[in-house]
Length: 97
Ligand SMILES: [Ca+2]
Ligand SMILES: [Ca+2]
Image (cartoon, rainbow, N blue to C red):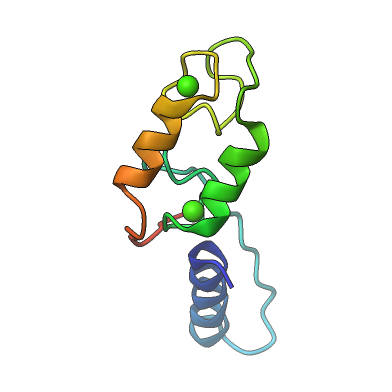
C-alpha cells in the first residue's frame, strides 16, 4: 500500500469518527506530488520499481517534460537520468497529498 493510500485511509477514518453518526461524509481530495523527480513512480521512495521504469524507457526521446523517466527533463532518457536515480537509491520520505 502506497503512502498516498495510507494517508487517504487515515483521513477517511478520521472523518468517520468526527462526523456524527448518520451524517453523510463528503471527501474531496486534490492530490499533488511534491517529491523529487527521481521518484519516478511517485510512491515516496527510490527503489527497484523506479529503476525498472527508467530502464524500460532507456534511450527513448521526446519533448522536454514528456515522461517521468526523463528525470532531468532534457528530452532523452539516458545515463544522466540513471545517475540521478542511483545517487538517491533507497531514499524515502513521507508523501503528503
Ligand atoms: Ca518510487
Ligand atoms: Ca534525461
